[in-house]
Amino acid sequence: MSGDDKPVSGDDKPVSGDDKPAGLSSAAWPDLSTPLAVHIVGAGGAGMSAIATTLAAMGHKVSGSDMKHSRALDRLQALGVDVAVGHAAANVGDDVALVAVSTAIPNSNPEVIEAIGRQIPVMRRAEVLAGITARRDTVAVAGTHGKTTTSSMLVLILIEAGLAPSFIVGGDLNEIGSGAAWDDGRWMVVEADESDGTFLELPRYAAIVTNVEPDHLEHHGSWENLRSAFATFVANTPGPVVLCADDPEAAALAASADDAAPSIGDGSGPAVIRRRVVTYGTDPGATYQMTDLRSGRDGCTFTLAHGDEVLGRVTLPVAGEHNARNAAGALVCGLELGAPFSAGVAALARFAGVARRFEHRGSAAGVHLVDDYAHLPTEVAAAVAAGRDGGWARVVCVFQPHRYSRTEALWRDFADAFVGADLVVVTDVYASGERPRPGVSGQLIVDAVLEAHGDAAVSYIPGLNDVVAWLGTELRAGDLCLTLGAGDLTTVPTRVLAGLQRRSAMHDAGVTDPDRQEPPDGS
Image (cartoon, rainbow, N blue to C red):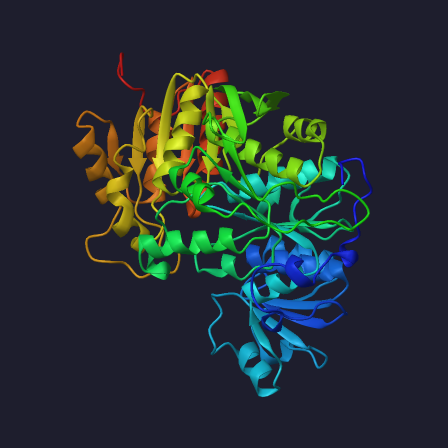
């Protein structure tokens, strides 16, 4: 099937014989082929909100609850979802046939107790997601980082190609304003989360692996177990599997994977899937090679070639070589699914990004603010490099470590992550539900940086209020203020921007800001 062919309806997908999707046995996921009344416990969370949005669009009767009011609940209510603030047994309606819960919901939750008492099935998010993805030919996007951006790019490429994909991704696409949609096309794009091993459970036909690094070892038990899980993910995907040749672990997966796989087609023409294992990147041995990669403040460009055939130039309006690789992975997967190269180029040329992925938050007083979800060493290094490529006078970086377990395991790996930043502040750890651990704080990361780079300008400022005050004093015209982390550090740019706007207004009025201390000459 070419990109110009009419896409096969999702209801006509092949689901028998060798073409059956990998993942859980069909007995382990709900049958969502006919309308059900589904209640979502924790519907305000990003993951469960996306599930609720998709189920409602599929035609199911959806209700939900959460502990506090949020914009996510407002959006669900606008879609016709019956939402409640607070958890109570009465929220589980008389007609509810399935209750879905997030991992944060304990068995002691009154709605879970009510469901169990009425013998209503209670399923985890991963199981319900598996039921959703079983209704489409699903592309599962996996990897330690880059999943959300790569998934979002692939969605837009498939939309541009007229393939009307459904999707559930980890952030709101700026072009669409949502992280989930249900459409009529054959394909579905979903993030495959390795944090708790559930990426192995998703029914899928195709996959992308952006990279593999040691993370979530508290679940997997060891680095070798995590590697093994990714190997299983690749081996059990019928194809195609698109892997980054520039990442050593993903390249090793590609080298060891079996190239034989069944084709997926509707029988009326050539099969969509042309090969099983496909690689991309700047590596000369990649199936699809990126050349002449350039990155700057306004974005990046590269040329993509398939063997001896130069396909063309790709322009991406978001910065960072890591984003260029994400774009290449999405584009290559799109090509393998039948999207024309021209559609991929057009979609990527207007890619507006995803919330909290090198997100431009505003500028004032000559200072530009960017916020990014980066919280692993490689992610931080990539974000800092993207900032350095932008040509700002200084890169002022604030990093919030995420989870005590991750900080304890990885703090030494941050030693070189901030190379390229002129000033670095590390805050205290964002707990994300974990209990503090003795001796584990942001100071560990500061120590690692200073041990490797004794002259680095890096400081430990635990509290966010103090960080905002420090930035208000330190930032000056020409700076990039880069906030990095997966926690509540994302509130800082808004507060800093307000202070900078106040400073700028007072400067224009000829008034000195009493809260600002000008740095000495030459600082």
